[in-house]
Length: 494
Image (spheres, rainbow, N blue to C red):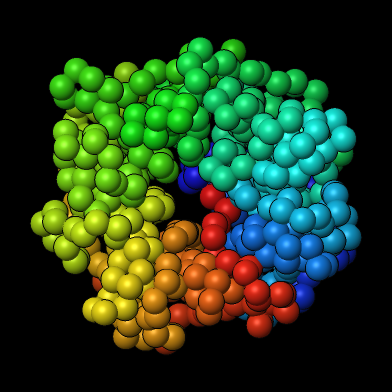
């Protein structure tokens, strides 16, 4: 789930009519604004404000259960504006394919300016799509093109082979892995080999640069991907959390360094005991300590395995900060935090799921990126699995629990109230939706309202994650989508 922010090239804006949306953003961007905001990787309409794409891959579309959709809400000077929104699925004009049972459109989402026109594009995984070329559950990756009026039209980028699940959960990221100035798309085939599609991309989804396949000699399973510059050489690297085949207890963190020739063979992050560092299920990348090297942040939410006995702070889930350096990530200097760590709200309890999702961005504007993490299994009093989000602070010394803040549906100024199985915090997102320099928090609760799902957006302030009168929530009623079993908020575009 990459938050890597590369430098974009701006070009001629392509203005197109947007189809399939509930309401459309105004075409008020101009070339000067787009030039000034070319690093906003999630600004689909080029107006200088980050937009939010949220997935409901389990949703029913056109009567097809599990076909899936993606909702996009556009940013503005006042933050997310729910009146400028779109609902996109394979039934939307211009989007490749058609809705079918269990396609899971939106199983993974990422963003980048793939065609280098100055507008962010949305890359969508359809992880259980059956394709003519690949066969059963081969999976599909497609792009929806950004423009001055928002997302419109699309193209197929890649299909997999039988049971590849290409574009499945956690298996998409973007970055310039060969340093040529164009964004490359990194996917996963047969669950463990990296498949790199080299940009730039034409509007039909093709690329003249070809592909790179990076093989893994072991029967690994990639759980999540992220991209960033881990060794400070100016070329994007890729990192992943993995496990050994069906041995879920054997989780590890690996990375592939980017070079002019593409990605190198992977390296496993080693811990202080000389063995590989125990990994997790998800990760993000960002320069937490601002030393010029991007760092790894790994969430390890699933506990109850034998490895809990010999890994620090495993109870209830944990977040691990691994600093980058000239030789790549340094697992010897890793810092582990859970709810028993000093300053972190709550207490570590089995099933909390601390570390379920991790996102890196500067929430309070102090210059150091912070980390938001979800705890969808957190109990609030007698309310089981209501869920929570904790924001951990970044400092010059790395990630710390000091000054951490917690947000739940029982927090003042937060709409709604905590209910059992809401799973608030199952997915989290950080981006600057109102252009004030502070990353705003979004949280998904796919269990809300009997698995219909809902999303909360909080405008950040210098001292608080939840600013008074600056919270927005939306669900299937606003979007006009089928609520039953939709589980809206299961994932965001990263």
